[in-house]
Image (cartoon, rainbow, N blue to C red; front, side, top):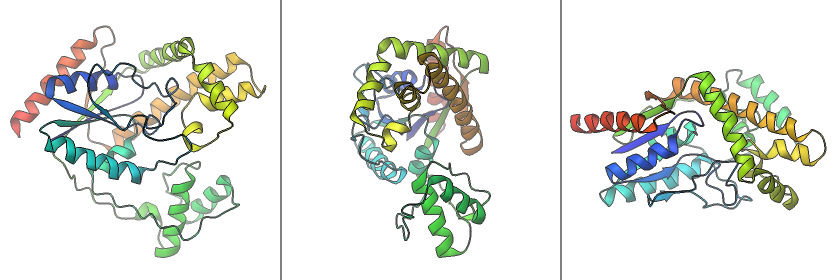
Length: 293
């Protein structure tokens, strides 16, 4: 048995995961692509108090490393087997849907890369991909996947988007999604960014800025790149913070759309006024599902 808690940012996934882990004798597997890295605490909204619940795949990688969905697939599956073998329930918690699907379904990745396209910009690569695969869903800044898709086309003479992917689920899984009304979620996101600033977001970003590291780990989370623009003198601090808020709001919308289209979640609306009601509602649903199986 595996439990998944997914959904947009700022809906309470981490708190729900801890609650369920306590109630159901579970351990949490992080399914957020940015929280796997050490030293990225505030911008990634990493949980501060785990309340004694075991968390896996947090703070395991250096920010100079490139941790891929293929790596997560291997690591998470090993953890699921280990946690299950000890009579506990693995609980995947996070907003990176591709990571969750790659772990739970029979996804196969071709890690071989015939051409690295050295010296070719991301924009140029993406234009090349659109010429052979106009239906691609890969983001133009995801250089590794863009190159993989180009090489797939060269090897198979057909677009990567048409590549057959099995929908076979490898584990008995209960899928939970948390959502919120748009205006409420936007308000919560804005307030969370304000709280991040109070917690020291600027100092955290400044430390990374001065290190001069511009790896995928640093540039992917919303917060750092916007503040780097401020440190460079290109925008004001107020503008940088507003960008963080607006980028996070748009990211939440993309997450919701992705989860709606790509995963069969049982959705629950987050009760911000009394989150215990959300917790109890989800717990009852899961217990009923377990009793049916």
